[in-house]
Image (cartoon, rainbow, N blue to C red; front, side, top):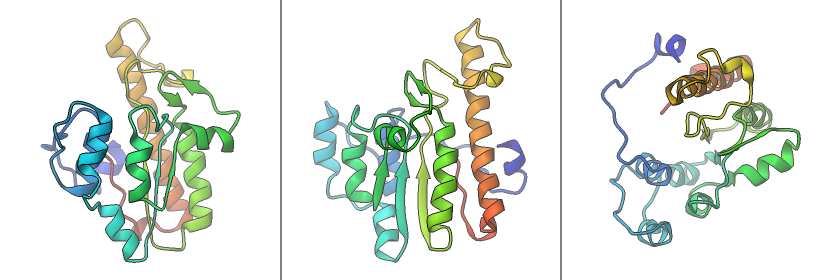
Length: 193
């Protein structure tokens, strides 16, 4: 991320509107503050009519897709995202595509995002697209599937958090490298949140 940030717009003072992933994604996609609700099911009802950025892009000829190696059914994320994207893929879809991928406590290894993006660019890279990749790392309990990321040890939760950050950083770098190899990085907005 540091290498990418040297030639990028970096917003150092941005904070999430909500620590819960679904509500944070809602705010990113709609530009609105999240609703206060008692449960995820009622959140779906409250936010159902709100227009998202991905829907606007889709109406203007962009192919839109959201990919997450986590189980999209746990917090109703997939149900929330399906009406807002042309396609939504989660743990179950990715596991079917990549049966040898390793599972973590939060979903599949983030490397599945790299594999998926490679095939996505081969299929959709020449069209206008809006692809959202949502990694599981860094996320408690900070599992990493590749032991090469465990450079900080595993004695404390903070060590494990730094290892998970290293893994996420590696995945982001490899995804950006795929854009460069496909020759579309100059006409692609690459956003890291």
